[in-house]
Image (tube, rainbow, N blue to C red; front, top):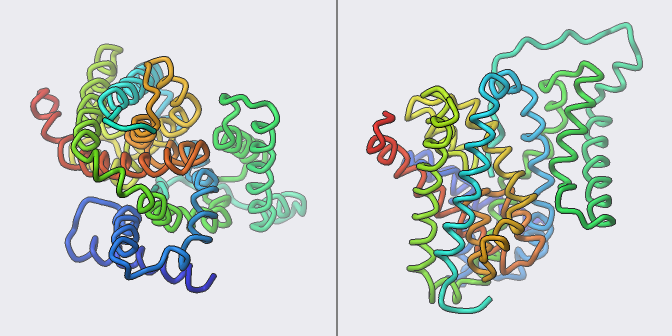
Length: 363
């Protein structure tokens, strides 16, 4: 176990070093994932040295998105101001990315973030005279509550088989409700929840293992896979901006939606560079991920995208790491190509979003 943690955190640390030294616009976790895949391929690491921990983290990837998802409560006012254009544009564009990427990536063969930065909100003062409230705010209680709620949500979905009962969505909704009812701020909740979110980066690095296992298949179809991700990326940027503007969104809101399909650090940095609203972008990124995890595979079936490679690639391209966690639940084969999709789309979004928006006359 110590060796496995050392390897995962070592790859993450190298990713941090590369970001610091080069200023490359990619999260250290994605770079760490690629490094892990490379080291396994070169034989510098053995699969058995990292397999157990990686399989555990990847299998529970969705859980680590719950605390960042609860941070949506900080952005309700921002979302409420232009709810209709944000909702319509996000849904339509995510569907477009799923289907366009999938139909382009059917291939020739068969078969997350860094936490959302907190706005400078005023914290509610703790009630020193109320022992019950003190307990409800206890770090260990809130940590246990987060685990318990997610476990209950997973059990509920397993028993019902309903894709609409997404454990991440249910957990986020219930925890936000609890915090609102008990008048606990997100800052207070995050004192304990950051211990869960801390494992999100190592979990993304661990996606290098399923990616390594599918390298031979990826090599055979690298051109259609890259082209499909690029087309999906550009279609997502164009469609979300056009639909948002048609629905009456302001200029700033429309461009803030452009990088919605990538992991939070990339999305916020791109949003900042193009003059968008990074906090709105962060909130929409979480919503897009949950939407894709809930309905992504169903949308792909309706869009006649049945190839597992295309489905996995589409999930990662359209719904970043949250979609990848859902793909991994379906099968490691799906998860591997979803990992590739989220990586390629992260790179393409960072490079092409300013160029596409400039051509559209938005910046």
